[in-house]
Length: 235
Image 1 (cartoon, rainbow, N blue to C red):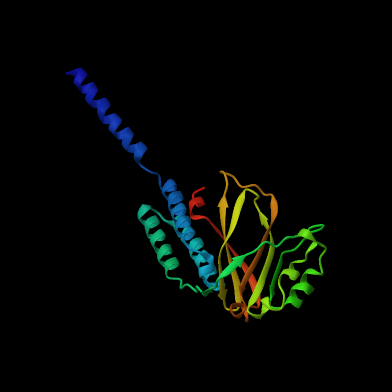
Image 2 (image 1 turned 60 degrees about the vertical axis):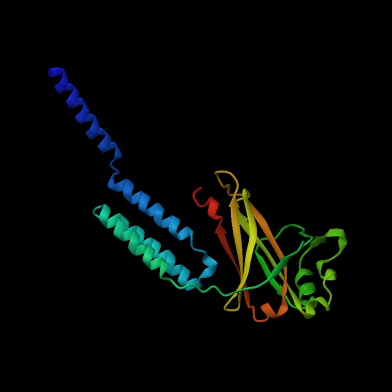
């Protein structure tokens, strides 16, 4: 009888111990909730929103995490997450107009490098010549890029050039989309992480594309939007 009592006591103790182990603390619950909020925002694409609306989304994330920290119990945490997601999902998109483009080889090397990012729209051959003649560039086969594009080309086409410093040499960057948003040419870059870590090495990313001239007739500036590949979000 005594042995049965001891055995029952041990069983009850083990059950309580397992329950305690499976019970997630409030602190861990809050950490998981913040990760859930980050994952939700990662499904959004910055290029789909105006600058003001993207700022609103980031603000809702900050407010949501503050509410999570202030929650007194798990129900409060769940409510904070739901409220933040609802607010984020309610921000209207400003997709703009996607335009067709063709990537081409630039074929130039900036001797001595560059210190600042370069962006340009060339609607005429003269604009292309004037821009690149300001720099010391070694051209492939000693043929400047503008000699590949005569005035006949610029009758219906235009060239877009972007050269920007990027952090992380262990990231493959791919031009995924080109859009017109309020006279701004938006370049969407998808970043694919290689390996589990990203270094701080800086590298130049070059974009040189052909577009239809009519599509960029009113473009006044160029902006790059960088998005992590969805398969890399959890890394």
